[in-house]
Length: 244
Length: 200
Image (cartoon, rainbow over all chains, first blue to last red; front, side, top):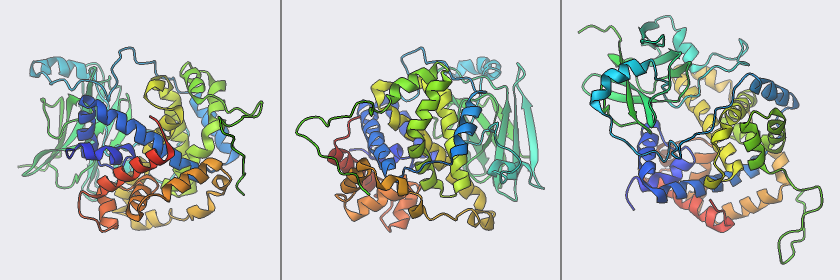
């Protein structure tokens, strides 16, 4: 059994970091045996939840059902492929120009796998989220890039908090079988993965990694599941203004 | 109190009108924006979804947020559920678990800067929250299966699934050599699966 295969159990119960998740999902795309094993281990893990069943407060039902009324269900996937089963296609460099245009057609990144998107019921009574803390940090600095087509992405970093947040608006989805991946440019190490963005037009996501040491951030289009190093030219680069 | 039910030699007899709703059917209808079907799905699964969220994040207010987020995601992505790849319940709980884990990890990232903020949200004794589970026959079966694991397997699976820790963190917590916790988690889950006869 090779090393990556041994990660199936940890992956099935989310006991992996973002880099491991990306690596394992690339492996899953090619390994039917692991796909079956993960499915069976997820079934198993689900039975564990039997031991913790707890009725939520009654008022939560109305809040949940009220919340869905304003959310449109996604259409079914029409192709047979799924993110986990999609072939890991090689990014084609000659598509860069197309990607820049498609960047209007593209994005939703994600860091830390954080589900930091705003919900309609999130109101001021909530404690500040990790992303809000960065956005509201006294030393926060932002860089905004506009894409052709009207999409925009803003990276805000706070050296005091060691963190960076990306906020996207009107981002088109990535090309079929691809994802947007975030990177932090770390001196001496180059581009280090800061997570893969979930597909969503408007979102605010925390980049994983130490933003205080990074000199910038970038977005690339990567095969589904993400890459451990960029395999294509960035569609966006954000300079943290540290000078040379 | 456990409810003891006699089991015959064949399939367990199910009383008329007591059959649980077919979750896969409800999900399919929800994928067509059927809010009434989604409400029935909520009623059938909210205790398990919320119980899992509560166990992982522990803070009741945050657990409610996680439950809401998870159900919203379930509603949004219901059409992507594929019954050939697993049960509806497993699909729901996979989304719930990921949402809960993302919540604790992003909270943890921010609490490195602000520990007091984190501490004031760590208040629940989860043992008081799972009373509803005590009566479940299925829960009894799961606990019996858990008892067949080695101690280190049981701890590793518990810290990963209920604690929301990564295998690297679990290795450190259990004083295991780096890289072996993932094996314990996998071995433990496989043993549970085989003990309970869970299919994919």
